[in-house]
Image (cartoon, rainbow, N blue to C red; front, side, top):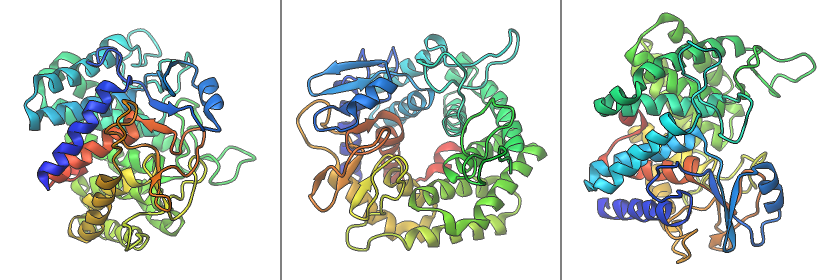
Length: 405
């Protein structure tokens, strides 16, 4: 199995280099957000109008916007791959992506001269500051993971120093956002930062549990009581609303809970919290296909026969790894499904990737398209880099907390 997992990862790395998402292919100018299939895509024009930095190619385009989270995830992937392959090319690509992030991209945000850089802008095509909770959570966690494992890169880019600054800002934003609903809005429409600095609907684990994940990694290095307070109360918030969460949200919730369980002193409560989340998630698996129904219908087509690799399967799989023995059987079924559907099309935009959605009824990529989801969107971060990272973790018998802490 370990050879098969590595083979899948190597094919995916080749997709990164061959599809045009990195131009040039060594990562020195970063990685674009996604490939968009133009043919038969009902929302292709809407996508290229909204995400207006793009390069047309034969039958597809590359959405060129450089996002901090996608570039961090890709850099982490190539560095982790290097640890297995020993390939200087893999390491160089990972380091080039980091050089792009810190030295070329302008994505590090600085509101006033002399203040420490910490927050990361959502995309290089936006002129106004838009730091999202979910994106910055990945930037925070991955900086810590890489900074601890590669002291020379930490020294070069001050990764841990910047991560601590980001954690301080994230904690403040979490505290401001808890329970805040703008006048005239419903409770779940927008739990937002009233200071209008951070963006994201913190009512949902997609946002708040990723923040829990990242703050737990920071707390492990720099334990501060105010950080522990936010980790605890947001975790209790997720636990109290457990019945509300769909498959996608449960995946995020478990990743956050597993990281918090590593560092928080209330070990018994967090272990129980994690088990309860795991029970709810595992009960949603189709025992025959191993799939978890696509239910994130605001940004992707929904249905029990659809394998959503942007918001669901790609996060449910690491969540099952986080559950250990509890999630082992379910994780094995989903792993086999992910390996089975990896794209074998010879075209460079497809070969070795996971597209955004697979239709189990037709046995092919499909199921419809949305503005930011569906089969025609093939993401670098959030889909391909994370899935390959989880395959490497599976090969090593590890889980997300093992990779970060």
